[in-house]
Each structure stands twice: as C-alpha cells, then as structure tokens.
Amino acid sequence: MEKEPGEIAQQRIDKWLFFTRMAKSRGFAQALIAAGAIRVNGQPAGRPAVPSASATGSRSCSSAGMWC
Image 1 (cartoon, one colour):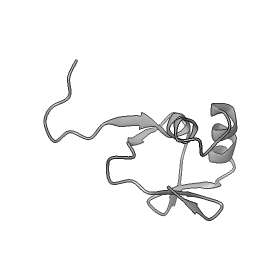
Image 2 (cartoon, one colour):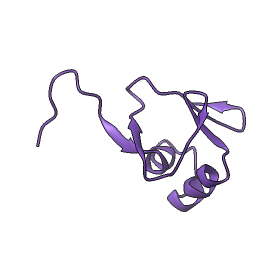
Image 3 (cartoon, rainbow, N blue to C red):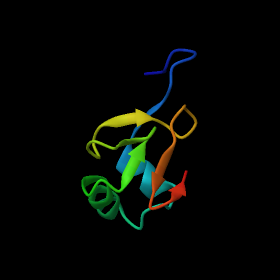
Image 4 (cartoon, helix red, strand yellow):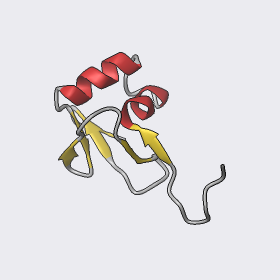
C-alpha cells in the first residue's frame, strides 16, 4: 500500500521518540507521554498510540526543554 503524493506519513509518538533517541526505550517514551512531559504543537501529547505527523511533517515536539 503506497501513500498518495502530498500525503503526510503517520507514526506513533512513542516510536518516533525512541527511533530519534529522545527516549531510551519505547516504554520510557510511553511513560513520558503519560506523565504529560511531551508536547506536540504546543499541546500535551494524548496517548502514545495516537499517530501524528512524522518528523518530516509539520510537527514539533518538546520534552523538558528539548525541542525536536
């Protein structure tokens, strides 16, 4: 299944934090999200399983003052 041109890729927030090495493990990333320490576009990230735009999309996230 290929995405359409112009379509933004989707990825779980916890996976993205782990793959970009912002979190030591997916479990730790999930704990950060549950604690409200991760913000996406200025709003607290809801749940780890909710997909959001990938890092190449129009998303910014922060964790304890670190921007990614």
